[in-house]
Picture (spheres, one colour):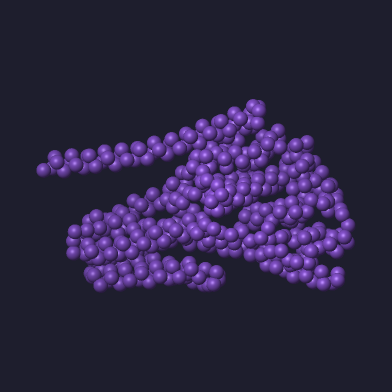
Length: 306
Length: 190
């Protein structure tokens, strides 16, 4: 029975590997984000600490292969180089993601530091020296957290979109949609809001700027996509620039907001989104006025020349 | 759990496609069709009421269809448009109008040069996609092949209308094709 289970798991692994190989064609930062998304789902699905007996785990492994489920028990028993072929191989990247996810729970207490990572490693049954895999300033932890939040936001927006398509919910007007999406994303910071200024300053380090900009821009693109943006001209850029501005300023307001449930922040957000909508209306008006003026001038020129 | 249904018809599954390659292809093709539109607009502005007006108008209409198709593909594949669009807007129109000011043959020469560049460019994209995975990109391949055939046709129409008799044909053609190469290079990246 154990052998049968073993061979089925191997088949499952091979299938997952195939998908992983396809995913590996993405550029490195995207791959890291994808892997992070994958790994988060794995860690969400198995909350039990790694330290539980591996024997039990093996026997209780379900033999049916569910398409959406990630591999059952990635065991960091061996993270050497030639491990691609062997079963139960967990790559270093996967291991890192598991540690970082576990570390998040210690951030409110220790901040975005190696201590939090060390504590996280401990809960997984690993030595605190595992924190040595990461930078001492906690960059990877913060980037991992941001990536995790972005993925959560995407899933949330996807769910909402499905509901609208199924007719179970009303389609929101654009300004409302943007407000809700930004609010939902910023609310994910609430548990860590005390330490968030530290995180922001680390994200601004030159070393981290490519990754953090990448994460920010894909999040903003996601929001606009689900808001129904279908622009294929320069509007694509102006919309994203405006929303990025709104998001960043609201985030800064949130950091120093002490009102109950951050109501001042949401009020600020509402005002900024309203400003953006006004700006768009004004731009349209300016354009039509401009066109009318040009037509008038052309008419005048024709008249004068006759 | 379970596979998520894509109920939205404008969305293609983005799993498993080579994003960087497809991104570039769609972005540059969109820019190309947009530019071609503006070139024909410029030519029509000058030669609209001449004898070649209807010919140019017909080719322009086909380019409009191409642009429409790429707008759809751009949304479906969630590709970023090139930031140089405002620039191509002006440059295309100026090229079209400028070549038309050299006369009907000048306009045709411009058409021949541009369409030849575009057809070559589409061919190399077709090669790339065939190397990647002809099955996965079947629809995209079909579109590009169709458009390449249309552009070839425009090229032939241009030749039929005495493009080669245009003033400084060789110089004009080379210069325009160099410009096209540069535009393609930039639009892929920016």
